[in-house]
Every structure is written in structure tokens, then in C-alpha cells.
Length: 204
Image 1 (cartoon, rainbow, N blue to C red):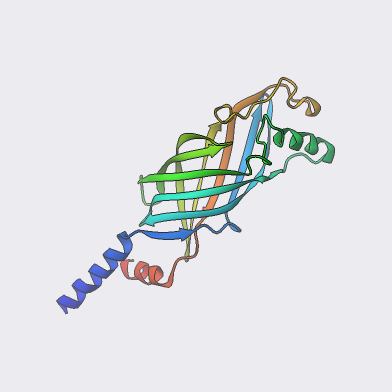
Image 2: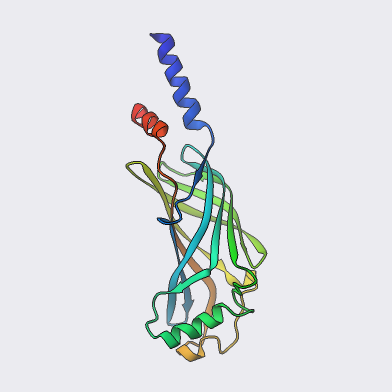
């Protein structure tokens, strides 16, 4: 009996702490952006093309999230003409220029477990072929057999050659746009495997 128990504990421990690769569910994951100005803001969504996470336990050891820069949507402007004016800016050469730079990436280089439900992620964001380090916190939410990471962070778009002129939002009545760009994300990894679920039930 003692030998069997030790064998079970060894199997559980080796599986829980070993690294496993997970695909990000791009249909259920989402990224929302917020561009701020003096006196207000504009917001919208952008789609994840693909994502891979190498995890051990609650920690993300490494990963790569690829963003589709051609999928930018504006959700707070109802007027189609005003929305198109803003989209024309986003698609211009001195802004995101998605025709030349169709993808942006978040390369995760590691994480620190702060609690059972929170981790601090470190990595590098690349936009328009310019890369800068990033560090942010994410909350882990478990629901039955899925795991979702929720969090937010800010980037300075001027670091990525995303510039604008004095008349940037003139057609929309905006006069001063802040450099900091807010991003909120909900990242859902693939469903828990039957083996993981079995081990989770044993441990609990």
C-alpha cells in the first residue's frame, strides 16, 4: 500500500510541476484597447491571431501571443464617417500601418506567482518591428475545466514609432491625445485535459 501511495504521489507531482504547452483559445479570448485624450477617450477591440503558453502549475514559463493589427475595431463611435476618419489615422504610415506591419506580438519570458490567483508576467511587446520590455499582473480565474487570465497594462505608443500630428483627431473634436495606450485582456487557454482534471480532483 505504501509503495502504491508513493507511486501515485510521484505521478501527481511530476505531472503538476512538469511543463506543458497550451494553445490559446482565440475565439473566447479578447483584447480591448483604450486611447485617451484630454477630457475623454476612444475604445475598441483587436483580435488575437494565435497564442501558445508553456506552463507549469499556475505559472506561465514562456509564451507567444500574436495580434492581428488589421482587425482593429472602434466600438464607441456610432457615426460611420467619424469612425472612418479615425480608422484612416490608425491605418496611416505614421500610426499602426497594418499593411506593412500586420502583426504585433507579446513574447512572454516568465512569470512570478504572487498568490494562488495572481501572477506577475514579464515579457516583450513588439509593434512595427520595435520591441520593449513589459511587466504586468494577471488574475487567474478557474471555471470547471477552463483557465482564464485577466489583466490590463499600458504602453507608451511613442516607443513604437506610433506618432500623430496636431490635427490627429481634428475631425472628431479631439485636440490632445495622450501617449499612454491602455490594453485589457482576457486570455483563455485550451480546456483542461482529462488527465489534468483527474489529478486536480485527487489533489483537492
